[in-house]
Amino acid sequence: MSNVMTPLSLRVPSSGRHPEGSEDDTKAHILVVDDEPESLRAIARILSARGFEVETASGGSEALERLANDNIDVILVDLVMPGMSGIEVLRRAKAASERVEVVLMTAFADVDTAVAAVKAGAYDFLTKPFTSSDTVALAVAKAAERGRLLSRTRKLEEELEVRERYGNIIGSSAPMLEVYRMIDSVAHSTSTILLQGESGTGKELVARAVHTRGPRASKAFVPVNCSAIPESLVESELFGHMRGAFTGAVATRMGLFEAANAGTILLDEVGELPLQTQVKLLRVLQEGEIKRVGASEEISVDVRVVAATNVNLHAAMLAGTFREDLYYRLNVITIALPSLRERLDDIPLLAYHFLRKYAVRSGRDIRRISLEAMRAMRGYGWPGNVRELENAMERAVVMCRSDVILPGDLPRPVVNTGEAVVSRNVLLDLPFADAKKRVVDNFEREYMVELLRRSGGNVSEAARQAGLDRSNFRRVLKKHGVAGA
Image (cartoon, rainbow, N blue to C red; front, side):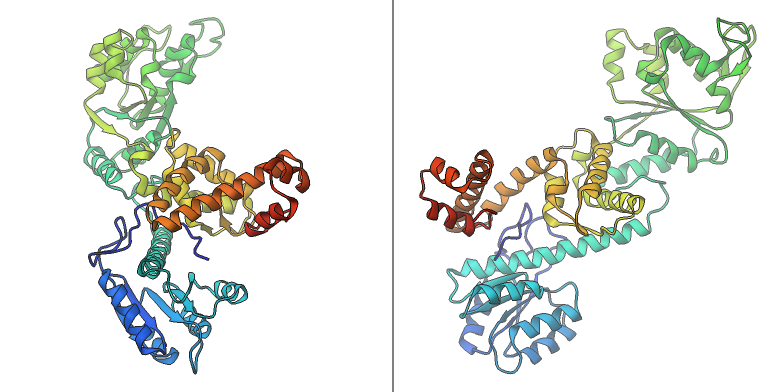
């Protein structure tokens, strides 16, 4: 029954601390409930020896009293007890506290009972006697970690509600806190700013934040994608032109620098500007003056310039494609924007932000992202950064068929990479026998599914290819819940 994947860093506690990577280092608080005194003492000793803070109760009523008065993370409760059954304790505990996780245990296990326990909200279902002390300790550790992850999810949702100060920039990781510090430091200056970061890291959002937090906030913010302007029109777009200056110039037209006067202009992909235009941009930065194409007089402008690039301007300068004097004039204050893989802690916050955005836009009632889907996203490299994550969540909302985003709703590259990372770490969290069983089970299921696919769903043909008789083949299918059994 224990098929919930563990976090990447989960280990059974052995020193009184939570598993590595958890929200804090306080001990997980476990309540063991069993009407058999010897069993109660034995389980308490096992968990205490592994660093958990353990309380015991000899019945359901006493357990619920403890739950009401103490901060319990996990309840480990026997299924069959006089007075109040473990299932009833489970139901009442879940009704009293969303954050508590419940693990049931019994010496009288059957499939129907296990299914009923899971439907009632149990995290896991253990059979007595335990195969080893590690079995019960691992189940409790995983339950405690799941509770913390769910609490973290709720906290992320609350953070989204109170997001402020930096517009639509989302993130609370250490690299992003440094970006916020830089924004606050430079917002009230007049110096030119150079934003450096990969495509999709939010350079325009940072430029807008600098603008809105400074004294020019009430004036224009003009973003310009330098790489999208044809080379023959760059100067006309930036500085304007006079009537008759060139074929097609049927009227005098102001440029983007004039449109941004008293405000801020963002020159995105500034490294794509032609060398001739770079000379004129340098004059604007040094003298605060522009000249329209075809004009004889200069026009004074007061513009805060923010330049952005996803290429190495220093390397471009050495290669002769970017002017040295302009490079040093732009590189007064540099803000380096981290890639998404450098701030993995922000992925849950960003993912929930985009989930809400696209769920509302599509009229879908999708509220959660499964733990497995979140781990897959954390295991992926995100070469397209935040922009790619947004696209992935938009797709997930479209593909989702319930109120929870599952791994299958995500783009295939995200799932493949994430599952590989998760699986490797999950296996290391298990005893050898359990890890081997999981690998074998995964192989059997994938092997059978692929054979069925190749044979067009023909069980007899798939069995022949597998070298098994039809009855044994169907038995393995049924074991893994594969359609066709």
